[in-house]
Length: 221
Image (tube, rainbow, N blue to C red):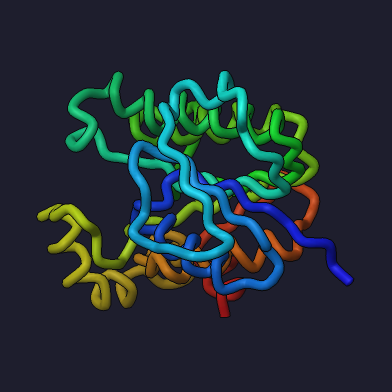
């Protein structure tokens, strides 16, 4: 019999994180789900515990619950953050802080939503920050690190993003125009990414492992 597991989830109110939360609550494998963020999610469940915390100070939390798996769905945009510095604080500093806090809580697996094109050597600021966050997490002593790299995420966000709304309408055409090796750049539903994360978390392959479009689609099936 599989022992019960506790999931620690950062970014539960975001596009992917909200789907991860719903799927964790539906799964019998995780008997406790603890969310950490600046605000709570609307869900209520007998195995859900929600904590409001400063994401930049997670490592210093004295009462962090013991966890097995950490799901990190943190992310913003430069426009939403207001500056490159503020963007880096969320997509790099908060992510690394979450990963280090998870280790302190006893977790052995870290699952991260990154982005296609993540590369610490990239000339593109967004891709470079994502790549640096991945590199920092890989260096930590987790038994398994699972990195998910979606391109354009499809789904209903709480906030309106004009550019993404236009891209979502064009998604069917974009998918047809991106055959073969360009598959990795195809738009993908946030629920599919979440499904892949939860399934891979159950399997917990030793890593680091990277999952892009095709791998996420097949893992969520």
